Amino acid sequence: MKRKRTSLFGRIAGAVTPRDEDERDTIFADEDESPTEREETAADMWEEEDEEGELTVDMYEQGDDLVIKSMIAGVDPSDLEVSISRNEVTIKGTREDDSGIIENDGFMYRELYWGSFSRVIPLSVEIDPDAAEATERNGLLTIRMPKIDRDKHSRVKVKGN
Image 1 (cartoon, rainbow, N blue to C red):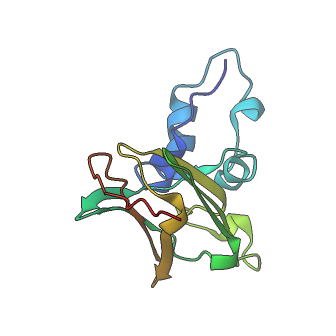
Image 2 (image 1 turned 30 degrees about the vertical axis):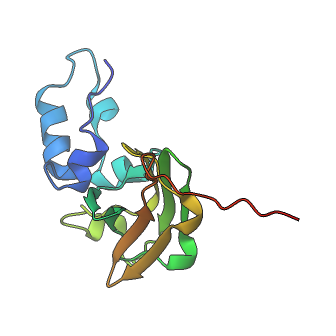
């Protein structure tokens, strides 16, 4: 029987610890499985995870700008890629785990997400990608993008020879 795993978001948010998930799997394990097939440590569960993490974001309009904020604590700005088009923003990066000196079975809780992550955010309004700015301060990424005003009209003077 295939294991039903808690979503990556549930593990990132701390809704379920790896130990809780192991206990749940043991309780609801298929009777046809041998005990060795169901035994998996919390460390094994985290090591075999190939999924990318997904960032949580806030997005709001502020005056003539569209603003996106996301917590990226522990991410070096050089490991962060922000790509902006007129209708979507993509944020990709990597959070490196610096706890390599700790043995996996030494963890009592392991809820922080380490590894690569990404998020594609569709935009509800059209923005000017060339005028966008991204800043990081104290682990908070802020992307500020000016909205394009489709109703704005301007007059152009015609120059003669």
